[in-house]
Every structure is written in structure tokens, then in C-alpha cells.
Image 1 (tube, rainbow, N blue to C red):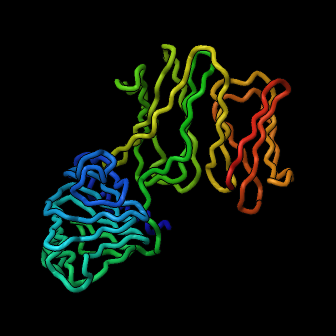
Image 2 (image 1 turned 180 degrees about the vertical axis):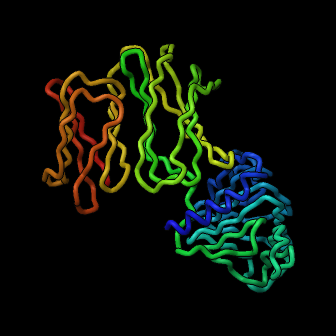
Image 3 (image 1 turned 120 degrees about the vertical axis):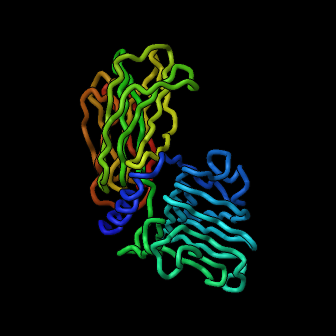
Length: 340
């Protein structure tokens, strides 16, 4: 796994010096490349984008476009229609994940489709012609960069994840303060997390920046306390920025600063880790108890005056549905079903 991460890191490193910041755009459904509704930003990919085709998603390329400073990740399928051309100029990278592929409508029979990359260091293609329709199906894992010497097969058959995989993002009251917490399962070339705040959900202000790990495959938890939040309702989101300037946003979280009932959420972070999020402090001891559907106690944990995100670890168990019960010595009693 380290070899794959190193390969991706090297590609991005060579791009940092010359690449402008990139914006993440993801295919949200099966459809045509030129259809704006196929993409998360409701527009077609453009120069300066990080373009992602997720697993189990097929995008039919139906255009003749030249792009520069793009990072295309294909974990699903890119189908080249007849008489189409996709040109990549420096600096650009194309990554085909282990479950991804590039193919044409009639694989191996028609050469009217081409993907061209400005690979002048590549003696095989002599500068152009990275993929043609007569070559059939191009299966991953493969990657190619305009600064390289042609297609490179990663050392291990590993997926090509997005730079940061979030597993939780919560906000909680602490009297007049707001505790903001988030966790990541993986990070590749991550630079920082910019926390943005809004009073109306439309106009945003960056209130701080928190350094990211850069490279990690472990479960990591971050936090920040906002001491200047004001208003009845406050909105938060996180802008995650990569080393090369590409960025993406989390979903928006809302917190009420006026008196309200505590909201408790349970988040599955991994097969053996849960996060229990309390939207405001609980002024008592709390018991967290994980049981099977037959009532067998799998794990139990005591927490004093919890606020914000609490980590709950479950020992070895079979995959299935379990019940997490949260109780105190007063009126709190919540049960949540979780899949572990």
C-alpha cells in the first residue's frame, strides 16, 4: 500500500510547482460527459478540475475537448463514443483504479476514439496517442502523467482513493462555545482543513485553518473550539485543501445556540469503532452499551459528562446489526441500530 501512496504522492509532487489549484467535480450518475446534470457541480469538467468517476458509475464521453491541469480518477467506467477525442495538456494526470476501465462502444474494432496526452518524454507514443479504440479495453490499476514516460502500473493492486476520506463531522454546544470535531479514515497529500462559519447558510467566513496529517491510513480525529459564535443558529462546513491546491467541501452542520434538547447521533467510523456525538453537554455520567439483536452485551463504556464526539470501541464480533443504548441516571435513554 505504501508503494501506491508513494507513486501518487510523486505524481502530485511534480505537479505542485506548476499546477494551479484544482476543484473537485464528481460524476453523480450514469450519463454523458457533456451533460451538466451528470456532474456534482452541475457543469461539465473544465481546466483546473480534479475529475472523479466513482465505482459503479459509467460516463459516456461524447465530445472533443482539450483540458489542462486536470487530475482524472476513473474508479468506474469511461466509455469513448465514436469520433471523439479527449486531449490532456501539461500538467495533467489520468488514474484508472483497480475497478476502473476505459473502453469504447465497440472495443478493439474502431479507432475513431482517442485519448491524447502531452507525453513528449514517452518514446513509445512519440508525444501523442495514449489510447486508441483499437486497443480494446484498458483496465486498471494504471496511471499516466504528462510529466512521465507512459502508463505506470502501481506496485500493488490498490484503489485510488480521494485525498481525504471523512468518517465524521459534528458540532456541539459547550455553554456559549461551539466544539467542532471531525475524523478521517485516510489522507493522501492533505494540506489543511479550513473551518468556515455562516449565520445564514449562504455567506461564509473562514474562522481558522487546522493542519492536516498529509499522509495517513489510520483513524484520525481533529477538533477546534469556536469562541466567537453568535446568533440563534450557526452553520459550519470544512474546506479540505490538498498540497496541490485542489479542495472540496464537507456537508453543512447546524447548531442552535439557544436552549434546546440534546441531540445524540451515532456514526460508524470503522467495523470496530463508533463515534457518539452529543450536541450539548450531558450533566451526568452516561453508559454506552452495545448489544446483539438477541440481547447479548458485546461492549460497555462509562463516560462522565460527555460533550461533543465520544469514541466507542467494540471488540471482536461478527458482522451484523447491533443496538447501541445510551442512558444516564436521569431521563436520557436512546437506542440506535448500527451495522458493524
